[in-house]
Length: 100
Image (cartoon, rainbow, N blue to C red; front, side, top):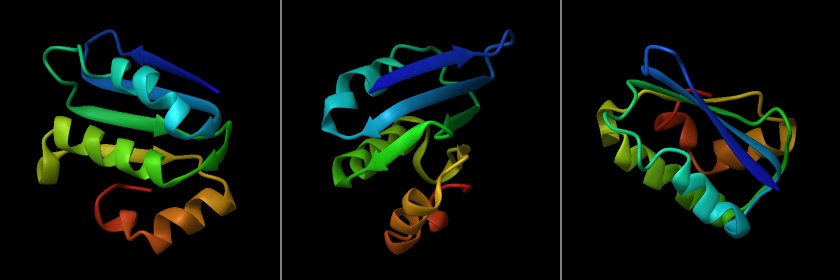
């Protein structure tokens, strides 16, 4: 598991990538990828192209990211989700909270 992040040159778009399993072991690295940025980027993309697994702690981490980014006004996209991850997000009604 690894978490990477890339901030656009203008500081407006943060892309977070998760490679491998997205579970509690990614907690600190995931938080570190966005928490210390000031101001908070206006758009956040979580790219799951190389994510192989997602569990309930990862869902909680995504909710913490959403709260940090402004709650209902947050502009967060979860992209490149595989079929299994998309199914978990759908069952959890995350399409109501994030762009998928």
